[in-house]
Image (cartoon, rainbow, N blue to C red; front, side):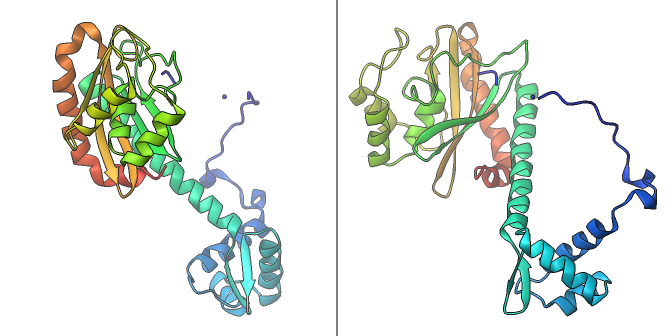
Length: 267
C-alpha cells in the first residue's frame, strides 16, 4: 500500500527581498479588487470596490471587466461577485488544507504507536484509501489485490461496509463478490453479512491474514454525517498480540482530534 515531471530548479526569492520594480502592478491591483469582492457576500458595485482598493474608477472598472471575462468575477445587476474560477481556487486550497490535516495526524500516530496507519472513505460506491503513513521499518501492507474489489477481506473494507445500510452493502457485494484471497478469507456473502451485522458500533474491526498472509489489521470507524470513513493500522502477524492494544490507542488518539478529522472526511 505504499503509496513527480522533472523541471529545472528555480531559486525562490522571499517576497521581502523583491525590488518594487520587479512587481507587476496590474496583478497587485487585481488581487486587491478580488479581496474587496470577497468581503461582500451580497456583491458590491465598481465604485465601492475601487474606493476600497484605492484605485481610480477607470482602472478598477477595466480590471473588473477582465476578471469577469476570465471567470474570477461575475456581474449581476451592476454588482460584482466572486466567480467560479475564484471559488475553485478557494475550494482547492481548503481541500489541500484538509488533506494536510489528515496526513499530519496519520504521521503522528504512525510515529507514536509504531505502526503503518491508513485513512479511507466510502464514496460513490467505492472504497477509497486516500492516505497512508508508513516507514521502511514498518511498511504498509502491499496492495497485491485491488483494495476496492476486496473490501470483504481487509479490515478497512469490512469497517466501511459495516457502516453502510443493507441496500448499499448488498449493492457493493453484487459488484465485488466475496472471493478467497487466503485460507483465512471469509467464504461467502452470507457469512460476511452476518459478521458485518454483528459488528459493535464504534468498535475496532479486526482482521487476521484474510487479505494477506503474514499481516493482521484493525480499523477504527469514523462517521460524519452520511460519510463512512476509517483510520486503520497493520502489523506483521507475529505481532498479533499488539493489534488490539494498538487499535485501542489509535481510537483514543482519534477521539482527541475527532473535530478536525471529521471536517477532513469531505476530502
